[in-house]
Structure formats: C-alpha cells, structure tokens
Length: 168
Image 1 (cartoon, one colour):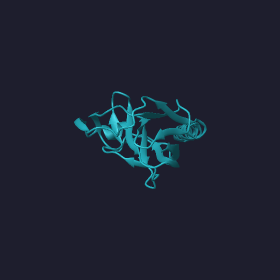
Image 2 (image 1 turned 30 degrees about the vertical axis):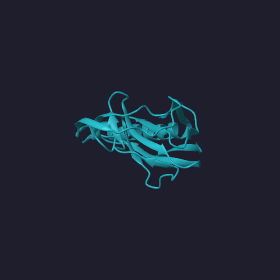
Image 3 (image 1 turned 135 degrees about the vertical axis):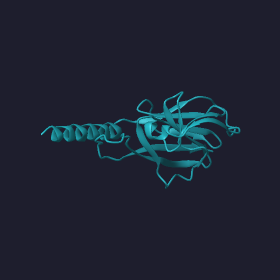
Image 4 (image 1 turned 90 degrees about the vertical axis):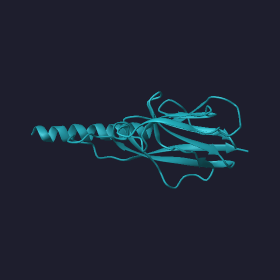
C-alpha cells in the first residue's frame, strides 16, 4: 500500500513539473551590445562525478570567456531571443534536471565548445552559441529527471524550446 502512494506522489510531481515547464515562458537578458565573437576559451577544474548530480552532459568546469551578449534563463525571462549576427547567446539551464540539446539544431546559430558543461557559480548547465545567420528559428532541449541510484524516479521527458530572432 505504501509503495502505491510513493509511486503516485512521484507521478504527480513528474506531471506537475512537466505542466509547469510547458506553461512558463523563457527568454533573454541582454548583457551587452558588443557584436564581436567570443574570445578564446580556457577550461580548468573538472569534477567528472558531478554530471549525475547536476544533470549536465559535461562535468562542472571553470571556463573563462568574454561575457555573452544575450543570456537565456528559463522561468525568468521572456521569448523570443533577439540577437544580431556575430553576437554570443548563452543558455543557462538550472541544475537538478537532465538536459540534452536536441540534435536537429537551428542553422541560425553555431554551437561553441565546451557545450553543456556545469557552472557552479550560476548553478546551471551552459551552452553558448554564435548567431551566424539572420532569420527566425529555435533551439530545442529535452529535459528529464535526475535520480539517484535506488530511488524511485518519475518517468517523464519534456521539450524546452527557445525561439530565436537573429538580425543581420
């Protein structure tokens, strides 16, 4: 009897998260107006075991880069993402969910590396893109739960879409 109620609670939490992700808009926070591409990247201090806890595809790292022109954070900003060709768009997706960039990515942006690493300073998984071509399109992520070993886990997968508007 107790197992049934635990499964029911897990299912309800999963459905609630799925519904909230579907109903809440996401968007951008402009951080500068520079149009030059990002400078070189320096990576250090990798924690390989962190990927299971954070939900990021890559380990938590310290990456030194030029600030992004546009920062996208789910649940706090508004759509669409507006950027100009050559600007850097940084997507910050919060720890605690398993995030995966959908393979069929927009041709409007070019993915920078490393992609999908954890950044402890903002408690997020980071993807950076360079706006390459003018037009409209989308960046799509799949999100699912992060669960520890031996813990019952809700079974869901949701789609998180970022609408793009790139100008020349």
